[in-house]
Image 1 (cartoon, rainbow, N blue to C red):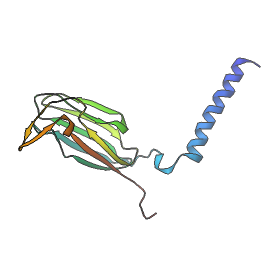
Image 2 (cartoon, rainbow, N blue to C red; image 1 turned 90 degrees about the horizontal axis):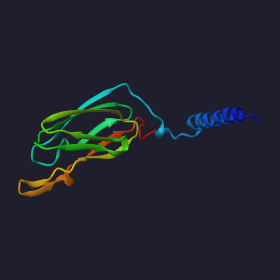
Image 3 (cartoon, rainbow, N blue to C red; image 1 turned 180 degrees about the vertical axis):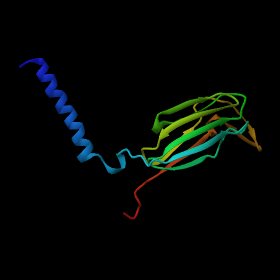
Image 4 (tube, rainbow, N blue to C red; image 1 turned 120 degrees about the horizontal axis):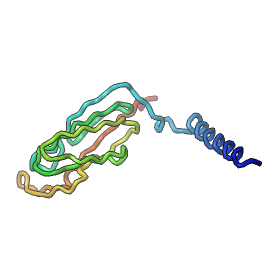
Length: 145
């Protein structure tokens, strides 16, 4: 049999298998959705406080999320959300913009991805490891269904 025919048959089987999986076996919670809504959220790395404000962000699954990341410090910070493959440097005294679609529901940590030091804030020791927040992506399917 000709090698090109074998390659064509193999490609058809692989593509057909992917389509079959997506149509018949992909769980409802994993199907990508888009609501058409855009959520613009400003998160600020507070000056010499080693925290994000707000620390909790809530969106709906399928929303297009635009994060405006403001760094008030004189040194770099970073923002990372592993589930969405986000890791962005935040230059000093600047605003960084990040866009993504919240395709998966659940709670995901967002944290500083650039070592940024430590210090005293209101008598408490704070530092790089304290710059952790949470992204909560709500389900589009009601819990009563």
